[in-house]
Image (cartoon, rainbow, N blue to C red):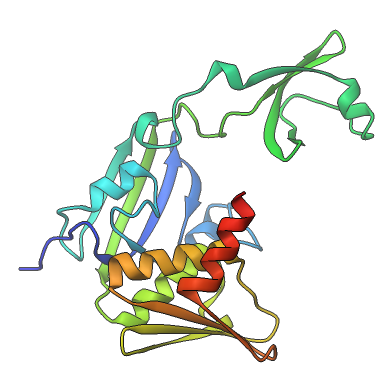
Length: 240
């Protein structure tokens, strides 16, 4: 009998997320093409996450606990454990002039970026537009098909999983090493990680892997940054 998945463990899995039967997110590239939802710039393939670390929405995260490490199952996720309920305060009335000044003709259904915040135009009338700044899936009941492929116990694969989940890079863009409770991430030429991404990788590697630190090496720069000090201090300064 396979051991049940526990909070804090690394697992590799595939999933398909739907709303009313319509796919909004998935890991299977072939299935994406078959259903006409394939995106050229999206990274497909199984994902490695830490159960309970918030790498997935809360409803999916909680559903993984107690499942066998090869389980295949379906769940429904209520808004409270998905993308939240719709907040009426995030419906804003804005003058159409804001869009016209940017040479944009506002129409219902158009996605817009206002001061760095994404929204969707709901309606236009009388020289005004109603813009919804809620998450597009807020208030929706989500359906997930989930397949746990296996637990990940190897330290190098665990570290790769953290790099992938936080950076969005492909594994061919970097290599990892583990030596004496310290990790090393060597980035290929042209690839860089922000200080905040490094900080998240460091924190999770300490909490869930027991590492003492992670060194990041950028190819061709001749520079290595030690996770526990330099990256964290710069990230904190950026927050000030």
